Amino acid sequence: MAITRLLRFIQLLPRVPPDGEFHLKDLPGSGGRVDILCRELAACFDWAPEKWPRNNIQLIAMISNEVVLTFNNPGQDMPIGERAWAETIRKSLKGEAPSFVTRTESTLDELTGSLIDMPENRLCILDEGGVPLSEMDIAGCSTQNSFMLGDHLGFDSVAQLVIREFDLPRVSLGATSYLSSHCIANVISAFEKES
Ligand SMILES: C[S@@+](CC[C@H](N)C(=O)[O-])C[C@H]1O[C@@H](n2cnc3c(N)ncnc32)[C@H](O)[C@@H]1O
Image (cartoon, rainbow, N blue to C red; front, side, top):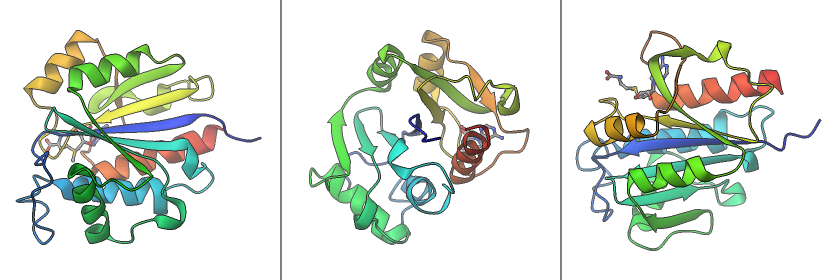
């Protein structure tokens, strides 16, 4: 049966310079942990999906509570490796986005509100302390399922406020804190098994 549902991941990156001014040789430091996003993009569009169509995956990066980059399947234009993804992110932040990336200006509060307003979209927070993903009714899930992730420090005060304001449910992949890219792979795999 063809999969028509969308899996969407929203990575919060409050420390990434929104003007794209970071050094390609220092992504964790000058890039404010933009390396997290590079690895997630490779997971979403390269190595993680086995059955799930890459066209049915979207990754949104919320940068410093002011810029939103939305990534869709790059297909043949796939950047290969962390540095190539970092160059794509930097160009996109500087207003030179390729066709598979959209740059908009928005706050986390506005972005969350627009996701909540989308019909057939369920939005959850990925959090170690949440309800186990295995208890989620994946087969009976919405047409669009969106999962929000924190950075290496978890969720900052802006994110905590938004999570409370919209009363977003928390979903857990277990008590261990995993790399964000592995959380994404885990969710894709769970949806593949149930679809
Ligand atoms: C590297 S982890 C965050 C780091 C960790 N919370 C800490 O104290 O350093 C990045 C994000 O991945 C997600 N995450 C990591 N492990 C998870 C798990 N076991 N269940 C659900 N989400 C998880 C969360 O959204 C988290 O904010």
